Length: 301
Image 1 (cartoon, rainbow, N blue to C red):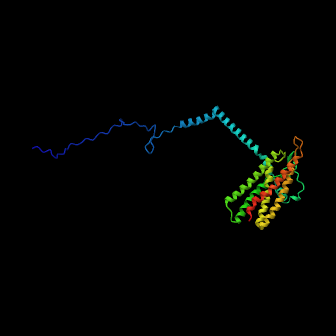
Image 2: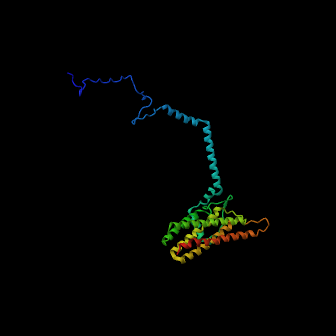
Image 3: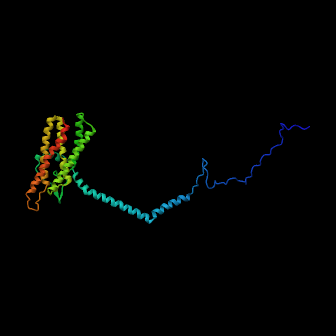
């Protein structure tokens, strides 16, 4: 009797596939040319010859005559530019002349301060020369310097800050305005003096540094005036203002009278030149007390 095929499960065994032989390769092995990194990406192989070729190319660049010529040309241009800059700076400011005005010592500073405050006792105002060159300030007390004006200017600014702080009026803006105003007044005074000497054709051996020095000596009197005002009140301020103004005017007149050299003009009216020299000297001296009062009156109340 035939058995029903419903639910019949075949007992025939399945044959397992034979693994492929080692000779059949699906993909080519590229490990010899580009090894894989940890992330599974191929990285280019390191070739020492490439680095060696790069170093040789750099050496060839320096050995190239065209490159050496370009470097030499660039260096020469830089040196020429440096020389031009130094030349332009020397036209307006000579470092050797600037060093001359700072060639001071303690003995000179003390003597100069005494002359500025007590000029009436000083007799010899002549500036001494050595082989047509003026002696340095440390060798001649009558020579102008820039050390005392510079230190006096800084001291004046610090004293102004202290005076404003005592009066509860200190602020950086007010102190900056005080410093800039004092500096601008010196610049204006020097420019006016240079313009006056040029327009009136008064020949003199005064340089720009000389005028800055003589204009900066007023800060010594300003310091003395402010100190007396802080210590002795408004009465002490006016007494110190009168003394410092008279001393500074006397000092300016005696100093500029030696520096300004009169000359005769072509028309033979040489008598006008000494008068012009006197007018310029007196005007410069009279202008000093006005600036002192303008820059110190607001510091003492």
